[in-house]
Image 1 (cartoon, rainbow, N blue to C red):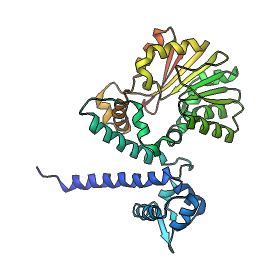
Image 2 (tube, rainbow, N blue to C red):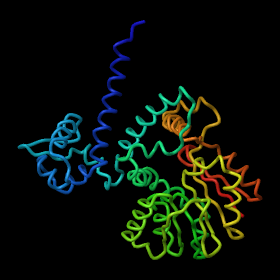
Image 3 (cartoon, one colour):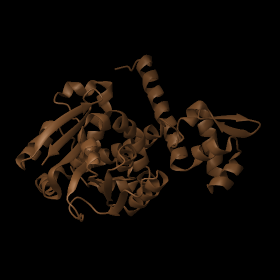
Image 4 (tube, rainbow, N blue to C red):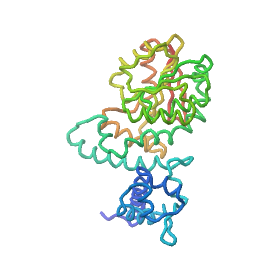
Length: 338
């Protein structure tokens, strides 16, 4: 069997695209893109002095970034190209998530290639095996989903406005860097929030960003999880943003806790990728990434859910439901009302 030149060229282009994202990731995980955006132009020695990064590595990174069109060079100094500027994490519409996902995907592929032999599913600790990725999770999710949340979900799911009108309390379980609550608080001036997360670094980051955004008087962040949280008043809204599938094995306990913590008329708002009913739907380019991510979820002991599975658990504990679909049905928000 002979591989056609056309197919070989296609795969080589894909490989170079992956390499470009790997180079971009290095500039994202370290403050290289942000620093160059601030400085305008710099030689590697100047970048090293500004960032504290090693000169030798910076020299080689600049070569690679130049090769893949992330940097231009003039008179010995490097500056960001338009493509390079697009990876600055602070840029509106930043491409940073694609670089992070590229490296995370490679990590999960390598782990799957080994674990598929034994069937072992080591859980979410596999995410901590790549130290440089952990601090980027919150910013990555914010860059990927905050626009959708602000522009489509918040205006079209009534429970947020209802909670604001009564000055209600929202609790975000697995809050990360707090972006979900911060976007809610910026839109709804009377809503109050508590964010819980298992990582101290995430909690501290969320508190700093809430202060930056001027909503720290209404938002509080603390270490905790769905099984060990207490508040001093009944809760109007409990949110789980793309996190329920991580605790699905404990669903009976989770949905019981939803009902116990919510006041009468309160709601649990679950945002999950909408796993398609038909395998053929995974061929759609907009769903291919979901198929790969679900492979990574299997490594972690999880799997993506269908809205009707979530609805069934709400109904089991006597809660009424509404389902809202977004992004051509790829994203589902399921509201369970007590």
